[in-house]
Length: 341
Image 1 (cartoon, helix red, strand yellow):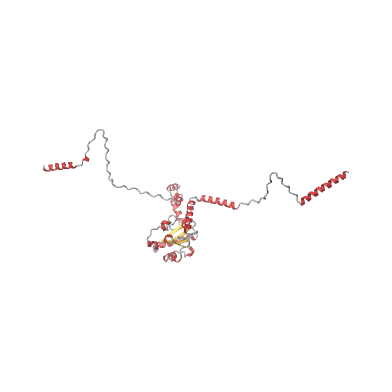
Image 2 (cartoon, one colour):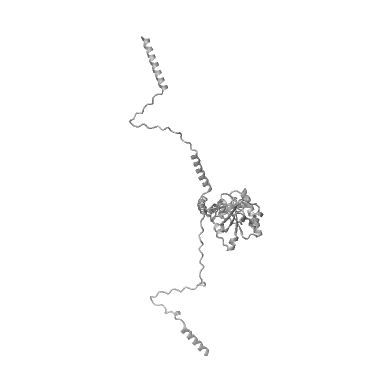
């Protein structure tokens, strides 16, 4: 009995302490039906992960040209399936063709007008690393013609880079390559109008030293010794008025800006159309330069109205011939008259 009385007392105390919100007064006529309360989900109160907005990719001439790249078109799934129906493994053919045209070491970064600022000017470095950073850059034209001195310089450059990667003895030296045929702004700022060239770059591009292949002993070991001993310090850096920091640097900067804009427009024109337009303009210029000169015309004054133009007087020979013919005709007439008499 004690247990039941104690339990009844606890139940009464709990009922008295219950909040009134758990009790409903019921439904009265004319009252709208109550809406069911939403059931809590297991993840209620947990913030949802909102996807980050991806910044739109900047459209550049190189990205536009990549849309019409024949390699990407042939390697697409549609092309692969179409050639497979003909019994041709186009993927294998493309890989073999690209392997034959490979002339550069792909581990060497290709420096362009678009990534020059990120690679060199704005490279994240400490103060000591910035003082020690040295860039060894080759400016090549091998992409357009795979022979000659440019191909030889590229082979020596890639061999020196490979030996450096294996040895690991030049931690402060970075290697880069510039394709002269596809870069306009950098080469114009550096006043380089032909290739190949070797460039030793310091101070985030403010100190430049240029070398022709004939000025260095073009061997991989010699190039590594040239960098290890810092023999490039013997050569004075480019310090003309057009060099970085010079009084006329802005001229080359402006010229490079204009040429880059022009190149970005011209490169989007198909090559066959560009050849047609240039050929037509050339033929027009040649025809204009070889146009025959018209014959000189005598200046004759037009006769004025109401004014009689004087007849030219006969010359002396003409007058004499006229007088002789008239006298002979008179003599003939006289002779005929005398004969009749």
